[in-house]
Image (cartoon, rainbow, N blue to C red):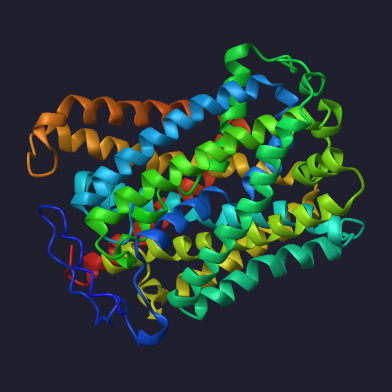
Length: 471
């Protein structure tokens, strides 16, 4: 079924409306390819949230946070509470603004064009940098099957292939995006459930290692490990970002967001504890495929690890499939309002094709740069950059909800739930701010450079709008 046109976002007061471009059934320009473009129902919307949350991150993160010790499990519990607060806030915002763009739409509606642009720009950076990080994580599991890490050229080629295959699936249309996402989400449950359930039969507390392994204070260790672990929860906003492609978005976006986050949180907690309890701490710190190592230690030999590596690869390709779609949706929404170049409004078969292509090219260049600059710590560096850039749209979305609550706009909130909604929004805002502090100076430094580069793009687009008489 084709998607109905999405209404353009109203410009803020004092700004003349921008004339929308000719749109197809999905609100994009150009041919829509209705046979290949379908709206997502609740199951696929939930699978999109779960598929993007449970992507490649969880398969490598146990090793990434092991240097902090088991105190990282405390960070994971706090992170889960914060992620649920964000999920509830996104669900509430989506009920009022069920449009493609998610955080961009909420920030622009509350604070105007510049805030909306910053949300779109930073989320877009998060998306394509995340794709590069996912590809790096996927190569770690591919190496279990085919030894590619022995050659830098082979490693780079494998990472690029893993990025371009999902991009081609996206270009084939939303019908295929949804099908790939549903299959990948189902398949990824197999290794996660195997480790989550089987791990408790082989659990050995001696494997846990020290509670606080590093030299950081307890608060510093929790903040630093939470900043890395946030990568495993990126995607909580997936249904909100793709609201224009979700059937009955006012009802289904919030439900899919909460259901997907709760299911992911439960699996995460079980699998993290299992991996910590089955893989010796010294081994886990240096592991490039901790889930495969866990299964090998459970059952002996290498067959279990090989099977898990295959399923982990499927999971990561599914996550790349979903993130590629999300990386094109936000600039598409911003471009329709004149805040991104108009090329991002072009859609074919329900997918913003320019956004997909630009995103995969940028992610590919970043992947090549990081491997050639030195492969040590590539995944952790990319993860921390996305942690910082992700907090910008999260902070703006939480602030938008607080604005709606405190500005007396009764049509946007239910007065009977004012106190609860305010507490949730403040918790989501505080949680996001805490993650900025935990990202570390290097990640904030690199993230700010990415973010401020966008100010020049905004100045260029604003000048073009004024010259055209639309500002």
